[in-house]
Image 1 (tube, rainbow, N blue to C red):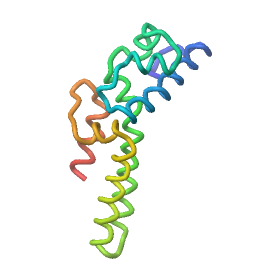
Image 2 (image 1 turned 120 degrees about the vertical axis):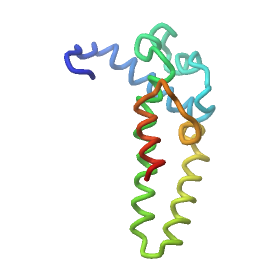
Image 3 (image 1 turned 135 degrees about the vertical axis):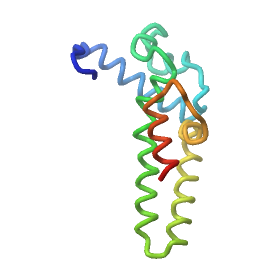
Image 4 (image 1 turned 90 degrees about the vertical axis):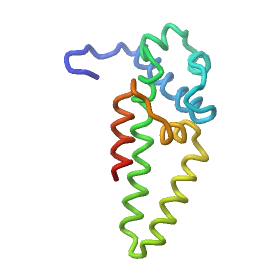
Length: 130
């Protein structure tokens, strides 16, 4: 929540949580181009409620993917801690591919640029620079 912002009412917070869970599922299954209407349907809220909480597709990306991309940080830390550089590299690549195979949205996030999702771009840029 941004400084000075009022806390969400309980029902609004529940709707936001349902939208985030539905978005994580839908983006994971269908990629980042998945229809927002599908997210609203799965969350059992109106499309207006979706846009009230997440006015752009990129707002979803910023809410969901920085945390998911943290898994790559953990893989990298494990890889660099391995005393055998080759094993570390292989472990990182296999782990990254496994994450991408199970989550199409993460795969899209790793391979695309999102100028309107500044938090996601910051995380991706940090990952690229290592």
